[in-house]
Image (cartoon, rainbow, N blue to C red):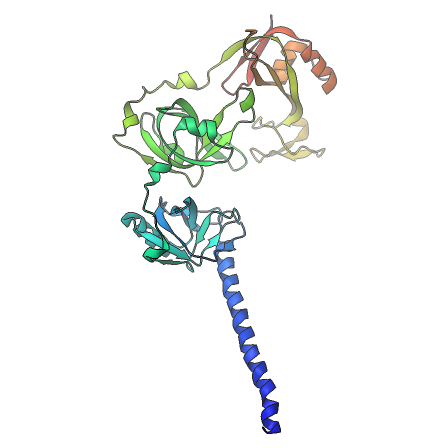
Amino acid sequence: MSKSAKSKNPAAKDKTTSKVGQELARDKERKRAIEFTCDSRSVSDGRGQLGREGVVGYIQSVSPPKQSRKNTEYSNFKLQAKSGLVPGVCFSSTKRSILAEREATKTAVKLDRFTYASDGKTIFVNDMTKISVPNSSDYDFQFVDSGIHQKDLQSIIKNSMDMDLVDFVAKVIAKDAVVQVVGSSQLRKVECFVADKSCKQAKLILWENDIEKVLVGNVYAFSNVRVRSDAVDVLGGEVTLNTTKDTTVVKQDGHALTNLVETLKENDLFNTSTSLKVPLIHAIEELNRFKQCCDCKKKIKQDSAKVAIKCDSCGHVVRSSMCQLNLCCKFSCQQNNSPDDKKLVRYIMFKDSIETLVGDITNLDDDKLCEKLLLLENFEITFNRDNVVSKCSLL
């Protein structure tokens, strides 16, 4: 072999190695592009993880297109995989049409080139995702209607964890006429109560667009409803259900629950007051002093020594000197006076009620105030459904 031929071999080898390296680099860039595309469109802004293997299942519950806070259009769906229902989010109108078609025909799909959300469970589908018909050897399970995954209210209240998402069918038995506006974002909410055969009443909070969708006396299928466990649950509180931006509400005409119970009057459930004679306070659990916005009367969470402070609730900038000092006391006592019933219930009492019992508290520090409250005997409190004391008096 000539010297010139030998001298070319290293160059040829380097050239081949260079091509392989370039191809690997391009492959990494493609994967990075897939991850970036889905990550940048994520509703939760969570970092996605590339799905290495295709998943097979049946598409269910494809929602209408929605707008995220970043004005990104997306739709929710569920994938009935072999292991159960998997939540999904689709960011492509073209892919959404395909998913909706597969849902209508109840035919299996195979998803490739998708990403997982930061929770490691939710599937993200975008324009780069491949949706195909799987081979018969790829799966061995049949379509199961999503209704089979619905739970009864009693099961949800007893077994669900805080922040769980649940599906259920229930009749709306009462809806508050008062629309509350909360937070700096001025979100609207309305309380209502729902029932099914397992539960006479459960509180459901309707947010924003869901408020107008629900009418008293109708039966609805609710999907993607958030479970919130009240912090006072162990002391007599309650579990509440909250609609979310991903909740779907579908009216169920002719459902068996239609004649389950008679519609209750609003006054039967809303703004009700109860009186209780308290022999003594079991424990003072928390004392919290705070400034109250002079406009919306809500607690100012980020107090400062500045002349002007901004209210977190209404967003107004107000004079600090105009904001009154308030005090919140959380205490527990027996639910009733029976010696056989030692169940403790937590109540919330504010400055006006406290001063009715112990007098002016301006010059009392927390230790002295706790001492005075614990020495109280035989007084009566009037409270609402949330155990907030509105009136109290010494007996």
